[in-house]
Amino acid sequence: MKKITIAIDGFSSTGKSTLAKQLAKELEYVYVDTGAMYRAVALFAMQNQFIGPDSFDTKGLVDSLPKIQLEFKFNAELGFAEMYLNGENVEKQIRTIEVSNYVSKVAEVSEVRSKLVEQQQAMGKNKAIVMDGRDIGTVVFPNAELKIFMTASAETRAQRRFDELQEKGDNVSYEDVLKNVVERDHIDTHRADSPLVIADDAIEIDNSYLSREEQFSAVLELINDVV
Ligand code: C5P
Image (tube, protein in one colour):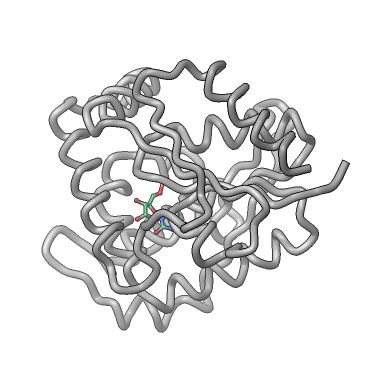
């Protein structure tokens, strides 16, 4: 079977990574969660006081970019790769609401984007990859054989993210999660560099009322049409 590139983009908390993981497992492809890379850079910016509630030292962050080393390491027990920032496993830290609150500001910085996009393109040079994010079908892999754009109502998405955070023991209110989802979508769709837009050739899936299984089998059919 022909090896292809699958680009999955869409709004926050639309279940992109769940779908991407399912597909990668089924097809024996590599899965890359590009949001984890932006989150790790945001964590670095927080740890080094480049970003805080009322400040963002963009220059400080940009000057320090060469010091940021990102790596995915496959965890066989979990069945997916975890994010390492300068050799440290930061998988848990990057999923907190604090990082979610800063990440979209960090992702607006063009120098951050070009560093990460270069790394993402290198990871996908041999195809057989499922990558999810905001600019995969438009910027990272404009020639991807299959592009999916996922949407769902903000309330559905916030509820899903809230349930996930609760399960992890993160004590956060539904209102704060909804606010974060709406704010991130606003910044992601309005930024100057690589805004979140639907690629002309992407297939849109609104999964507000679709189960994971229904969505998975619909996408497998799309893949069968391409390979
Ligand atoms: O996918 P996730 O919600 O973890 O992404 C976190 C944030 O990283 C997004 O809200 C967006 O600001 C940024 N991002 C991006 N481009 C990508 C992936 C994520 O700008 N390809």
